[in-house]
Length: 379
Image (cartoon, rainbow, N blue to C red; front, side):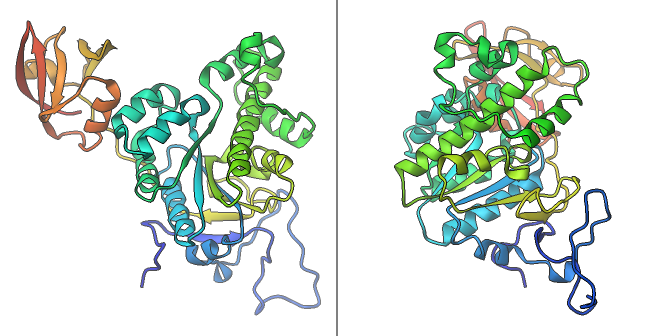
């Protein structure tokens, strides 16, 4: 029988601070110890918890962090399962996400209130320019939050700010941009700095010095911690599920400790989906093993578009596309897909997300003041 929080993956959650030998095999004469870094790590799968058991232990936690590898379907399925489980516990709940940037909070609010539709939310928030990951990965989570009236909090720093920090460092910001920095930035965590430096070394051709790279990471983590703290202070009865890349959650020195610094009495727990890293007890409170799964490639028309003034104009054709053979021409303006009006890239991507490569769709274009409908095979 499947548990109520079963997702289409194999899940086993393990409390990393717990024992690594079963009671049946443990020699009481020996002192149990955790392995030192680099030693083989033994996890007793007979003591593994179900996802339901894990979620039940979260009921007294005000903040729950669940990390992700951005392109892993299984990681987002885990996040959705935790969101559903926390929602079922009946306490006020908010969803804080890395995927949207703070200046676009009102856009999310308008979407959740039903004032704008999903495509307009994606367009106005700049999702495809600012986050860019396939929206199909996040859509089930966002739609669940909307359906169950769970506030979504845009945690992240704006692209303009982090881009300038990367170019000039925090100290080189203009007065205008400096005002958008988080109110507190703690540089005292040397383990954090070393971890970020290890990541920096993986980019040997980096254009800018490590100081700039570190400043960007600090801006992201401190901003997301500040955003969460601001919401939790303003809503003292609310809990929050925070979803972000595992690098912002692992070892707790990204977002978690910076949020705890702002809210000293905070109860929180961190959960990571396994991504192949060595699972030391310090990396998270829980590690969840999932079956690796990725999305199939998104369906595409096979054209390059010029997008401006609510127009989608065909500029040229990709080598793999079938548009030219189907009768499309450069200069055509795409106005509908399967009879549904489309005038922005966000709306086009959302409509195409319902299809897969090889599907045939009816594309309506405007050419020379007249409309015509062409059947096109997607790639």
